[in-house]
Length: 342
Ligand code: KG4
Ligand code: ZN
Image 1 (spheres, rainbow, N blue to C red):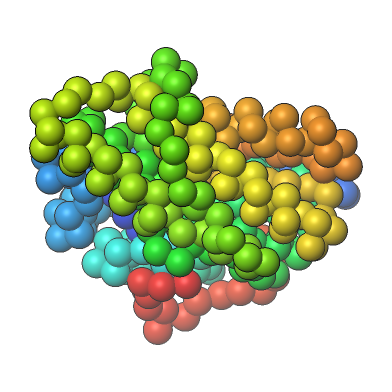
Image 2 (tube, rainbow, N blue to C red):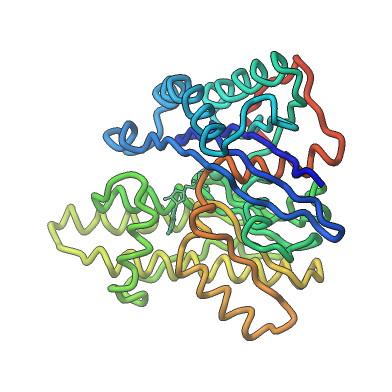
């Protein structure tokens, strides 16, 4: 059978991406091959400001989206007329940034008579796991942890999701980045915090938990972030030195144990036996190893970790989720609009 070819565009934050995937529809489950996954990172443009500047992001997406798309098609060795569907991130994200991708995808799809599939960015992050793990099938529990989102999601089918826990304030990646920034690391500092935490002493600074202390599955990362920043400000006022690795290790230890605590509660509450993580922060090696340990102790739970290359924002994950939405009959018409929220 001829494979299904899907192009997807991602532009919700600070990475423009265009990807082509090929889907072989086997008797049991589809198999995904990423034919191209072009990513134009805007990080150098935002680093000087210490975070994403929405207007700069929108302009950079507008500059990159067209050439990136044609590069993705060329790398996949196909042309627009070969496509079965065009997927696009329609929500949530920075509205001006999303509109660039949505309007580009609309023009491409409707001018060429190709079905257009709107995709939720957060569900796209989860879908990255289907590329890494051929055998992963819903239902399962997913933690989506990124610079903009932190949610525990009960994935009931490929297109049926229930968010059962979320952050009430900052996202987990945002907290990593802000602590890193106060310690003078360039934006985004999450990966660097991950690295230096190995050299520090996690018991050097006692921090509040990010797991809200009752039966809820919600998190709060602002308290722990503020505790670290206040501590650093006090030291700086007193002109006292600190060890960045100790701070990174303490912060990372507190975050990781909060995440494990709420995932343990969510697994018990839902009775699910598969645990998936997704999003930029799913690349964090301390979270990966803590969950690996958890699943070694709780042998009824199987852990699925996405390829690190597919953790951050990319078009391939959007294309995979677009495939499932396409099969479920989802189609956008010319009225498709982007939206900032879930
Ligand atoms: O998924 P993503 O690319 O964008 C959003 O949808 O937000 O996630 C980016 C976030 C940033 O906050 C970045 O610092 C964080 O993921 N990140 C990490 C690591 N790698 C990326 N945080 C902690 N440890 C890492 N290894
Ligand atoms: Zn993302």
